[in-house]
Image (cartoon, rainbow, N blue to C red; front, side):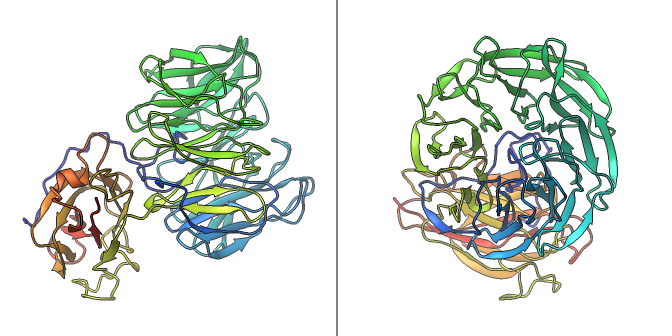
Length: 556
């Protein structure tokens, strides 16, 4: 194996970090994650503090954050933000946000770069309060915003590329400095109702749905300055209770509904750079607080008027597949789509609250009842861990760990020394120039020769090229700025560009790992590692580093 990596053109790719940072999972609020979700409803833990309402969990790294509400609103007991270990469910910390007279409850806006954002809210936008920034590791308050804002739990937050939280509320949008809490900018807008007013980010823009004469429109605001730029055509109707989402290709989608079949439609738009144009629209089912989804192939998932989820062609809006009618006493649909295109859906129901997982073609995989689920799911984090939050102590983590998987060869000081004493975090590779914790390789899905859904996800790397490779033996020796872990007969699976320090193999369209790695038979043992470019002067004269190793025993 050579000791240099080929340079890559950084082409657009399906790549989000494996965190679920906000409502909708990512800046576009499209529910798309590179992780592979659980194959079945296999619990790895359950339990949390009791809550009377189920609120959206968010995930970063090995931690999941959510509000557990202690009393019906208005409550002044400052329902805490609770942090639990993603792998074990153990409570790590709980922090209460100071209550204000007349407000209703605490809400978590999201998590980004080790910072959790939370505030207090009222009925819709009736209460203004400070935005609080908490340390994700300890729960300590890092700052509170200089200016009040009046966002709420059903609005959510999106994050600018540098980590600044952007809150789109009923009549105003704020961007706060993630380091200080100062207002970067705020700008007026005209929301339709005092909840579900959030925005979605793509490129240099934030998109919201606003009221105009005759109905609603999608407006584009400049993400850097907050300046209004232009808007799309008018959608007829006068109430709306869902937020827009943006696909990785930049298409904008909105379910504009008011429980009136003559004006309830799911719209697709394209931003040309100078105008927002309508591509198509299809009849939509009535819902509130919806977060719909986009698949890795661009397929679009939404609720139709017959209480079914449809998969739509992104070019034409034609229905490709449907679930058929699903049970719900109320619809607040929330969708996540994993790296293999499988769909994870909560109906938001109460007595008939339920959670489903479907294949990309919307054939059923598995389902579980979750009474009073509201907006408590889904959230999908590292290793494909799915969090579903209900009321009471009903918080459940589901995960499918590849059979006979183990990690080895850590750059954390527990074994072979890193070349320059550059130890990483426990279970990771050696530290690199941009991440003192080092890179981490994790596997999720099924290591099955007959149904290979195994996915390798690398995180914590520079935004450079990363080689995913397979070996036949476990080794542990200094190599470049890290440790070589996968040895023997080596197969290069693929070189991928990192985005936000992360990449994966396979990506949509790639051969499966067993096919690309020429895995011969059940019982075959193979080792995996990521070798990534790190050209900065950091440790040795080499320009590369590596993750930990992962060992897999393949099954039939």
